Length: 379
Length: 232
Ligand SMILES: Nc1ncnc2c1ncn2[C@@H]1O[C@H](COP(=O)(O)OP(=O)(O)OP(=O)(O)O)[C@@H](O)[C@H]1O
Ligand SMILES: [Mg+2]
Image (cartoon, rainbow over all chains, first blue to last red; front, side):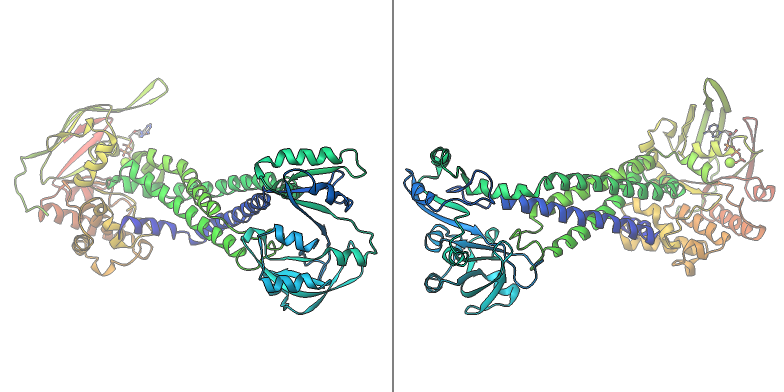
């Protein structure tokens, strides 16, 4: 036997209790892993847009559209190199619960502005040529088993009716965070099907010098200030972040829940260690009698509680990690989501902290335990 | 283990002016005061006396488990009364083998593992530890029970494992606080046989607290503690 064997024997002394404690720590760290991944994903989503492109939307809110005529005036603003626009379509394929994003775009200028959308020259031509053509992310192809050339029907929610599209091209995102579950189709198709009732949802403005983005945005908004449709212009990143904050204070909520769970589990783990030490008072006295120092018996207790916390933490984090593996429910909303290295490291840090804190009081108790009074108590 | 010795004049433990008091508030509860005692090498001593007379207290101080209020306890030239608890822990690991009334084996460890405990603090390798453990278990006649857990052993057998644990690191002195106190006559007698052998055959120095005159009769000398006074 070794000192490790002694710790093992103590851990397996009450298998059920050790298992339950490890399991509750695991559940807590699973929650932590999932919740923190939600916040890191939200943060990443807020940072995904370009700083070199501006988005001009209706000052009354993004559900309001803008007159197409704004495009020409935007093009004439100094520093603006090109202008395109896009509309939110909001349809679904078969299952209304099964969400993915569709955008009606002014295709030629839009694709020129978005190097994130990687597409072959041939596909690009095929997409641009056909009025009802759709360009979809490879993730969508995989998700629904679609093929290029296939005709699909989406049900409109904002624009009612059945909408047929022919998939003419697929793109791969240049970076995972851009997402591979978007669908693009021609603004003209939307315009015609709605009998010209629709106007651009928002304009995307490319700049020659990104560092002057703030000035140009101010110039644009000043220009439209007294028009029929005043605008709100911001960098695409800020615009994206605005969407993300629609998720409200999820970050705060997640942190609050996480903290509460951590402290709840701290009490559970601390209680387990206290019980473990309380029922072992006689044994600790024996260890001290044969020559284990106060520090050594305290160390045994700390190592035991660290093992419980670290094993539980590792299990919980592994579980959280596997939750986000492959195609998961958050993929469409937040591409590239998952347990980050930061989350894993912080998780192990927290587990370490949990083990230290929950073991601290019982460790101190065992260090301070007087052999003579312990033996008197046991006898 | 050290070779048999008949030299009984060599002083191993020299206790001078030993006092122990407890305080309840400002009230002093004196257990004993100003005790002098010499324990010679190879001696097998019994300590008797009424309950509450301070036998365990004295034994615990000699074992380095408790600090006296005043006085000195010199063992092989070292005054353990002046050692810090940390120093005492290390000192105990090499000098003291302690036998408890209620055996105090760790229930999660096998007999062999219980005996091995004191050796975890030594520099012995795994194989050497195993050899020492088997030798100690052999000495107490429990080689065949090495892998048994305490719950699978009788009280007498558990106490013999306790003795094996007390002798495995070849300590300077073996101390027992009513080692037969929880055993029936037969098992108690077996334990006393063992202690006699340790003293006679291996020259071990033994101090044993007991309430049983028959047990005390097996020792080479008996001391009495009464109302804080020790008589030899
Ligand atoms: N921590 C303590 N605080 C106060 N008094 C104590 C403490 N420990 C022991 N005593 C007192 O010291 C006295 C001696 O106790 P001790 O345990 O040495 O007696 P004993 O001779 O071993 O008795 P027994 O035969 O019952 O084991 C008792 O009166 C006891 O109440
Ligand atoms: Mg006693």
